[in-house]
Length: 96
Image (cartoon, rainbow, N blue to C red; front, top):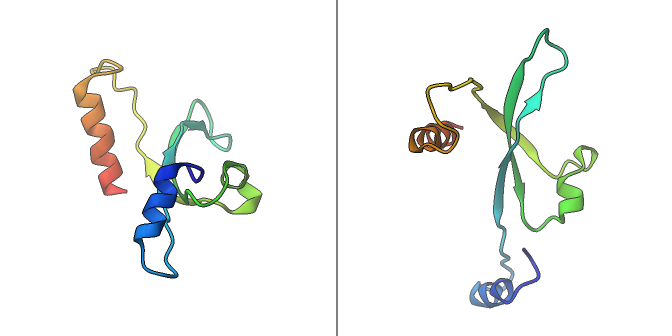
């Protein structure tokens, strides 16, 4: 992310002392071990692209912040790649 020509060109356009700070939102299903049964959650994390992925991916380095959780459901009425499933995901992300 921070090695390309786009980065340097954008940085040149900013006022002196400013910097590019890309926002990264990430979510990935995880199983909750403190609950009985097959409980899952979709945590949503916020980070910035100025941090290397090694820092962002190590919880002990505090390179990302938990914003919230997306609701988990079987959604059996939706196909995996249906438009309705994508709309529901984006509706939930807007709420977070």
